[in-house]
Every structure is written in structure tokens, then in C-alpha cells.
Image 1 (cartoon, rainbow, N blue to C red):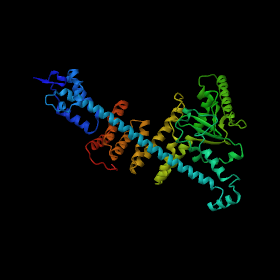
Image 2: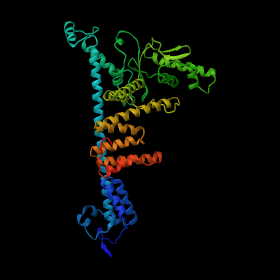
Image 3: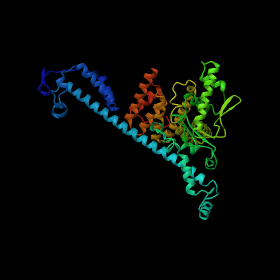
Image 4: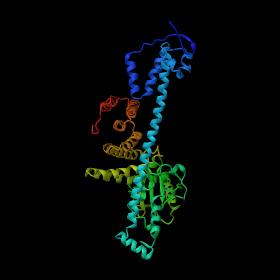
Amino acid sequence: MGIRAVGAVQQKEYSPVIERQEWQAIRGYLNEADYEQAADCFHQLLSSLEPPSEFINSPELMNSPELMNSPELTISPILMAAYQFCLMGHHCRDEIDRHQQAYEDAVMRERDMRRQLGVILTQIEKHLHSDLDSASEWRKLDAARGRVGNGRSLWQRVRSLWKRTQPLMNDPEPAVSEEENHGMGETAVIPAVTEPHDHSHFVENSKPQLTVYCLGTFRVYLNDRLITEWKGLKGQSIFKYLITHAQKPVHKEILLEEFWPESDSESARNNLNVAIYNLRNAFRSVHPEFFHLLLENGSYLLNPAMGIWIDLEEFMQHYKTGQRLEKQGKTLDAVQQYEIAESLYEDDLFSGDLYEDWIIPHREGLKDVYLIILERLSQFYLREKQYAACIHFCQKILSKDDCREDAHRRLMRCYHYQGQRNLALRQYHLCQKSLEDVLDVSPMPETEALYHKIRNGIRIQNDE
């Protein structure tokens, strides 16, 4: 039996044999807004039919409702239309997801900025009132003398404090490249905010202050100036080794064994001396009249007379404080400590040193702590129904380990509670793919159960 086709082409009707189960699967994908899977199904059906190309590609099909509703129309162009609509739907979902992600990122950036600004203001208030017992005394003294504290004006003290809170954001000398400055915005205020030492002595004496960033791009500041003249990687590596070993003295024999294991004794000692010389010169290029690195009883150590701030030590301090507060039932205080620790973790330890074997166990240990912090924060914000924050921290977990099913499940719950059913179901498929690609396993029963509840519209309690 011949019929009239698009473009008046006479063709034999193609009648595919489609199982009822296949149609149910396609309907299920469409109900979940999983247009990609539905498009694959339509494409497979079209491939099995092999209809004439001029029949499928005719433009009249998409532009003519009369043709779409014609009982004489063969099934091939209808399947092609469905396939094309699925592709358009898939592109729309991608655009929705991108906008949703941008919104959530903006919310978290604003939240981090507000939190850090609050800490800065607290510190400013603390410094401004450190010399007097009350605000009224401040006003009286300021009115009488026009000066406060140690003889500097109120504005001078605020300005001095502010300059110390942003050594990374505004470092005119030496200049910081775009690459070095990228990503510093969120953590730049942390050294001055969380550092336990009082910096006011910078004005009165020459005691150097060393600020070291190890979590992410390695950076060292001496008196707020970035050190760039390392003159050799071995001296820099030895400095990193001293920093990661809790500033404890390290015997030179350990350094010889670690960095020159295959050299003879004389060559190794000569190499060590050259590396130490270059390391000392790197510090002297900024602060020449001070011994930054000491040798005592055959061991090297950083001069304890310096003020030293190291991000990884600060990171661990806030993590341990958060743990202690959490055990005491002070959840909100613990969350505050975890958030400060999380903001310090710019990236993995010495992220640019991928081939230093001694760094690996330290890096993995710190990353495990970071994942614990992210887990605690995401669990807290899920309980508090602050879903954007929970999503933010879960995505950070998956950026480090995309096989963490607990993070996938929390994301599914957040999307479900936000009314974004399609994103919740999509998250399940991402979880399924990651587990299959990396571990060659299927999702856990808890994940499967959550997926089926969301798919079938079954109510999910917050405490499940």
C-alpha cells in the first residue's frame, strides 16, 4: 500500500515492531526530563527503520501541523520529529542547569564574602579597643589629643590594620602575576584575621613576619613581600620540607637521604650546602639583616624569633577546634571553625609539585581532613534546610572524589527539596556513571531506593 509522503514522495510505509516495554521506557525518560536517553531510544528506532533520507530531512514536517496530524504520514518522520524535539529539550535542560549552577555559586560567594567581612570587622573592633576599657574613654581621649593608642591617629591605626589584612590582594612590590593572583580573593584576609600574633610591632622594630601558603599554589611572603628569587628548586623543596614537619628541627642527614639518596656523601653535602645558601639568599633579598634559617646541633630549623604563619597549620588548628566543639555539642561554633578551615583550603598541598614522593602522604592526609570538613558542613546545611549551601559543599566533595555516594545522595535530596526533580534524577545517573567508570560497581541500595522514591514522586523525609 502506497501513501503520500512529505514532498509528495511516494514511499512504502515502514511499520516498526516496538515492544510495549520500550515505549514505557521512553515515557519514563520523558517524565524525568531525561531527553538525552529518550533521544537515544528514538535514534535506535530510526536506525532500525532505515527510511529514505529525503523523506526524513524534509523541512515541511516541522513546519506543517496538517502534515504532523495526517493519518497518511508514515511513522519515520514522526520518530525523527520526536528525536529532534528531544535534542532541543536536552539543550534547554543544559541551559537551565548552567543558570542554576551560576546562581548557587553566586549565593555561596556572597555568603563567603559576608562571613569574611564580618570577621574582619570584628578584628578591627578588637584592635581599635585593645588599648582602652570602653568606647567612651576612646572618644574622650581622641577628642582631647586627636590621637589614640600609641600616638597614631584612629584613621592611621585602621589603615595600618587594613593593609595587613590583604597582603595577597594588594601587593605592589614585587608584582604578582594574574596566574599567581587567581583564586586568592576568598582567602586573602585569613592571615590577619586568624593569626594569633600581634602585628603592631612591625612599626616599631624589624622583627620579620613570614607568611606561607602551602594549600594550593606555593607562595611565601616576608614582611608582606612575595619572595620570587629562589635560585634553585632544591632550596625551595627543603623549605617546604621544614614547613610540613611542624617547624621542628630536621637533621641534615635526613635531608641528605631524602633529596640526594643516590649521590655519594661528599657530593650530597656539597649539594645541601648550595641549596641552603640559595634558600638563605632568597630570604635576605627581602630582609638582609636577619638569620632566617638556623643550624643547631646538626639540624636545620626556621628562626623561632620570626613571626610565622602557615596556612596548613591554621587549617589543622581550626579543624581540631571544630572537632572539639562538636563533641561538646556546640554545633554552631563548630560549623564556624569548619568554615574557616574550609576557606583556607585553596587546593591540595603544593598542588604544583606532582612528582615529589615525600609530599604525597602529607597531601593525601590533608585532603582526607578537607573531605571530612566538607562532609560535616554539607550535613549541617542539609539539616538546616539551607540547600544551596549543602549543594555547594557536596559539589566540592565530588570534585575531589566523584565516587562518594553519600554526597551524590545529599545532592539528590537537595534538588528534590528545591523542586528540581530532573536535577535529582540526573544526579543519580551521574553517580551511576562515575561508579561504573571508576570502580565498575553499581550504586548502593540506599542510593537506588532514593532514586526510585524521587522518580515515583514518593515523599522523602529530611531525616531518612
